[in-house]
Amino acid sequence: MTLNRAVAGLLISAALLPVVFAQDAVDPEGAAADAPADGGAIDQCAADNGDPPERGLHIAAVFIQVAISLSGTLIPILLKKFNLASQWTDTAFDIVRNFGTGVILATGFVHMLIPAAQLLTSPCLPSGWTDYSGLPAVFAMAGIMVVQFVQTAASALLTYSMSRRVSTGSEDPEKSKEKTPTEVTVIGNEHSDADGHHHLREELFGTGPQAQELKKKQLTVYILELGIASHSFFVGLALGTSRGSELRALMVALAFHQFFEGMALSATVIDAKFISKLPLIIMVCLYTVITPVGVTVGAVINDSFNPNSPAALLTQGIVDAFAAGILIYDSLVNLLHQNVTANTNFHLSSLGRKALLFGAFYVGAGIMAFIGKYA
Image (cartoon, rainbow, N blue to C red; front, side, top):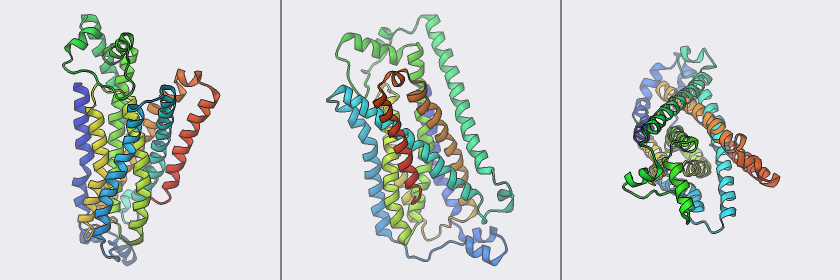
């Protein structure tokens, strides 16, 4: 649990870090000074405050985003919690999980990598940044490499820790249960027989391959939340600083965006089978509030914020590109590969079920790609 707490603390700190950077962009005069001396370029890079601020819509957007984000995260939770027909619900959850994988993949490519490329090649940036058009891909690769290194290092640490517990004889599912002061709570079906409880304890507290894979899944969840949270803040910031027809279009598009992304995140958290409900609660709450926080910050600085300033372009562009690498890696390696490509249960299932799960993946990616046209 020490590793989980440390990563969770890092996650929350990193997710809120963009708030600090946002204030650097609240200086249209400085932005104009940093822009090229060409008069046309100055006009292009100046803050566009033609439409009056619409505080009422911005306030409504905060509450709408809270409701939509929370609704999206609750669907997989309710699907697992209120299980009336085990086989049907398991299939439905797998559909939601694969749908979410497609959503995350499309979010990384369409909603983050492409916009990052546009931001980091903006003519409002100094020429030193725009001379190399491949820079967004470099930051995305950096995100992939960092995630892969962190996962590899964490996996080695977990393997070493488990091997030491086995060698000292300190790890036993029954003893671990006695040492645990609170009862283990897992979202989903409860095992009614003693054998089911025994296997569940072994999976959660054991030292075998299943326990190690479970801990890797939990690390994946933290990394995924980091990528989604940083992206969600800037999505909210864009909504809070927009005006007129752009504001109304973004409100509708981002409602769908947050709903489906919330489903994807929640399904991934549940699949990691955390020992307690606390990580699920923290991640649901963080996802629910991070976009409204961005909207609020954007609405407050609406009059002075210049999205075309070098500080704003570089901050959002680099964060989006780096987070895009995280989401692309997670969706392909940690989710699609584990749930489909290398999943024995998937390969043993019927052709119809395979088609259903593949269809859910394609539909999730397709819907988010379509939403990318408007958000």
